Length: 198
Image (cartoon, rainbow, N blue to C red; front, top):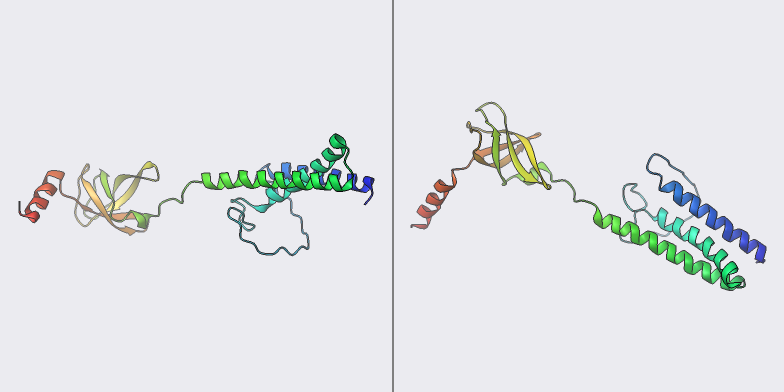
């Protein structure tokens, strides 16, 4: 391959990779679709998913490689005055570095993602406090802490429960929870002492 053709490849790679990388970082509102008839073997790599847009994808890694491959090839010619093989070696090293940086950034972002929100069914058995009295046939509200915040949920009960009482969640009914009243703490200690025979 001639030096001019190689320089054209490196320049095109650097410009195309950098431009597409910048476009991909603008956000979810802009989509650039390239249909390339390539068969890519299925290799499972942690943090890389081709099918989910809200997760780390292979696109930034590939574009990072493409951009840095071109920049590395141009750098090898200008800074070191290398021949074609030396320029290709420098380009591959730069490309690998660009891909590694892209992978590291998205792997760190993936680890920093929050947990899945708690499902209501996971709250069964948890204790809460009544914030709006629960009538025998009506709804009240309870408050409990989960997912790092105090959450308020609509609640029902088979018996009336006054505001301020502690309850236990026993079931989920649509978007509400069914609760049962717990005895006051001193009563609970007396009951447990009776059970132990003290």
